[in-house]
Amino acid sequence: MKMPHSIHTYYTYKDTPLQASFYPAQNKPGALTVIYIHGGGLVYGHRDDLPAVYRETFTNAGYNLLTIDYPLAPETKLPEMFRCLTLAVEWFLKNAATTLHLPANDYVLFGRSAGAYLAFLLAKDDLSQGPRGLISFYGYYALTEPSFSRPSAHYNQFPKAPASYLKQIPDSHPLAAGPIETRFPIYLYGRQTGSWLSLFLEEPMDVQRYSLSQAELFALPPVFLTASAADQDVPYLVSHSAAQSIPKAVFHPVLGLPHDFDSDLTNNAGKRIYQSVIQWLGRLG
Image (cartoon, rainbow, N blue to C red; front, side, top):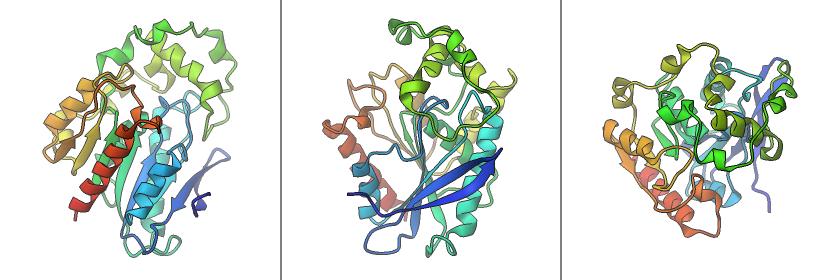
């Protein structure tokens, strides 16, 4: 059974509609909205990739859920990607009462993997109204992490992704969603060769510009973090370090599971962590 939701276009970027799916809280109007940003290495994925069981976890607990598009790399570079996400948050703030019929426009940012990275960027940005909190599932907050700019031993165990694959991708038309079946080789190539950052950065100085400093981490609102100690995509120590640098952070590690451990719905670890998220949201007040 499909969850009741509505779809809204928050911005049209180069003739490509960027949309948001709104899942209202069940039984009563939710005063707090969780704005979800999907992962996929910034090159693949779609806004509604969060499994239905987790969407229902939020809405059944009395929270609204808004899932948002953003244009993907390499067709779109990070500065424009980030600008579009800022417009998505501002759209929510302006339309919460009128279009979405909400009693308040308070919100929390939630991202998985690259989506968590984008949530960190938004949380430190000068939005008209900042988030009440941030939820990071196996994410990162800086592009200066050394493993992002060198060949990955883990991904080099996979069959080699040829450079010729990138030449087949048109660079003139933005893409708001990309299936993993056809887009994962782009990410794989970037990680195998250590050139992943070049897929979405325009200039070398953007590495620092789009990374959070220790001072910016210190100034963040409350943050919920989770990651697996066995993560071979984003180093576990990234989340561990963030938990130590953010004053109002809680960290719920898991052991021996893959990067996106909550994607395995047969493993109770994911469900347990989402219940911890709900408890954390309840303490935000």
